[in-house]
Image 1 (cartoon, rainbow, N blue to C red):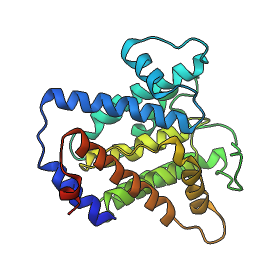
Image 2 (cartoon, one colour):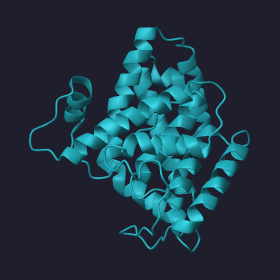
Image 3 (tube, rainbow, N blue to C red):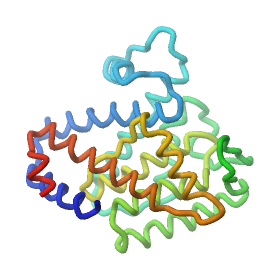
Length: 254
């Protein structure tokens, strides 16, 4: 799968450089799409069309919770930060990077907790996994960032991005919004390395949650199902790019 991804990546690179207008349109396409899917995975009720209307026209949807609108606006702002950082050259992930992503997403919901490590224990429903104690979060985040940067030259970017996502939700450093922060961090790594933005559609939520649970279980934890899921989503995103720019998918895959 990684060989196929890298082959598709090279075919996509031949299409570049894109014009300034194409870059802007592509950014907006993924900005809306990722905001919709990432929020929908967490139970946000806005549809793709409603997300588009809110972000492009500034119009809220009658009957929808105001929190859902705040989540969409915050995610879009965090996406802009991620996209700019990803295109800023050689990338070194810092704790400040991760905290800034969370702060931009969460500040409309609870400004006092935005970008701040949690001060209490969190319990994740539907799983036996227990995140670390609040007092252990700063040390675990420091170790995580160090390990992430040490791995960046040794691991395939797709595997590195999956690791970043999975490890951040393991630590669960914030009171809420950890999944969305993790998915933006994952895409920060992918875009910086010339890969496509991974969007996990709501229909894959059971597989997505299940793969995370397998990676987090006490007995025989296994990252492979989660890595495969992220790789599959990367391939689908590459296919979408090929469709948008009239690149033969078969030729690109070959």
